Image (tube, rainbow, N blue to C red; front, side, top):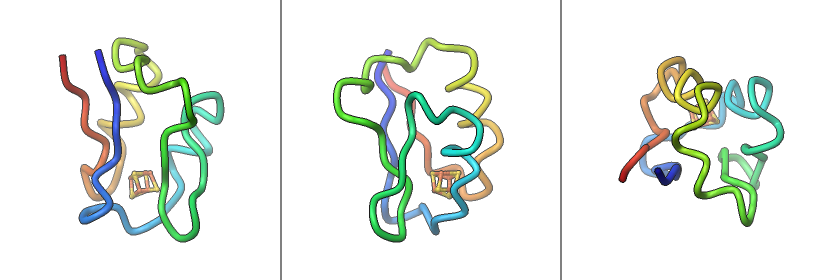
Length: 62
Ligand code: SF4
């Protein structure tokens, strides 16, 4: 499963970066998915980060 961040929703709390630094990173004032880590959407830690994102900006798709 794929993970991405919707920049229209993200406001840069960086909760995701603190939770899963192996997948998420900072890109200016936004969260971002590290290059090559876009296929980690089935990782429970990534799914937890999506659940806890305060703006529901982390998108997990098939
Ligand atoms: S937790 Fe959500 S709002 Fe915060 S940086 Fe990550 S994607 Fe953006």
